[in-house]
Image 1 (tube, rainbow, N blue to C red):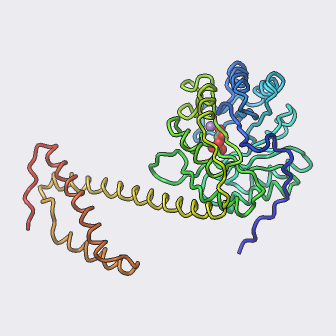
Image 2: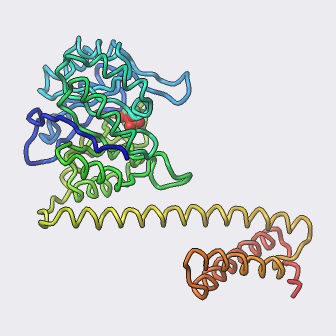
Amino acid sequence: MTPEPQLLLHNEWWPVSGQPLIISGPCSAETEHQVLETARLLAATGKVRVFRSGVWKPRTRPGGFEGMGEKALPWLKKVKEQTGLLTTVEVASPGHIEQALSYNVDILWIGARTVVNPFSMEELAQALQGVDIPVLVKNPLTPDLKLWMGALERINKAGIAKIAAIHRGFHYFQKSPYRNAPMWEIPIELKRLVPSLPIITDISHICGRRDILQEIAQKAIDLETNGLMIESHIDPDNAKTDSAQQITPTELDLLLSGLVFRVPTGSPIFEHLLEKLRTEIDKIDGELLQLLARRMDIVDEIGRYKLENNITILQLKRWKHIIDDRVSIGSYLGLDDKFLIQLLELVHEASIRRQQQIFSSEGQVAPKADI
Ligand code: PEP
Ligand code: MN
């Protein structure tokens, strides 16, 4: 059994009290004007305390915009001087840490692609020895709480006590309304293990699109998140990275104003357990739907094959085999026979309808079933 993480935290650095910390700014620093103008508008909302901006951008494939690098760091210094906002950048190597510190960046954050690799985390931890700066640790890309905790522990062991975690969702579903599935049960479990660790929800990288940001921000607030990270850009449609998920500072202001802050009901552990179980159900339903959609794709492929080879849609022998096989597996798993037969019949009827549509879209009458 892995021992629970023992983090030695100092939380007096937290820049707001009694309300979620709002971190906002562009996915990437692109030009001095874009950075300063975004920061000016964000500061004017009076709701944002920390300005974020990627300077070194991890890209899936080479050749894309990889960030402005060190050239952008003086822009962040100007943000601080001109707006009073604190600044944060993503660091992925000891060199990045050194450069960020030399331009007085206030807070460092470590991205999901770095957290996934313990070697990289160890290198960053070494580089942070003796440095007094808050560090935000995003969750790794994969839904692995231990890996996330390991990264937090490595940073903490290096002597960094001003730490927060950032929940940015996980690579999981093949198709999903989210860019990264939130899997709320994972940050909830982290909070249960280390209650004094602040957790910030990065709704932009969870959603990957603007239209569901509000709903996910509300969900995070309802779960008593300690902060929100939201990407914003003066011209989101023309942003060089993550354009589909960025919003303007004005839209950000509206989003924040639309949030409902509820008074906690007084039994958070119970609520969290219930929430944990509910998110588990949401996840399972999501998986069921993914599987059903995949099953239907295959049903369509079979339909096209039957059409080309003039085979009847309903194959009674095959259907009987499916019922017998699934009911026997289902009984073994403790599922009720009657429920299973009803469910299989529904799925089967829907499959037949899809195949009939394939035949009729080709102007063909489906060959009569061989009953
Ligand atoms: C980002 O915040 O711009 C970023 C690259 O995030 P993540 O590491 O969560 O993908
Ligand atoms: Mn981004």
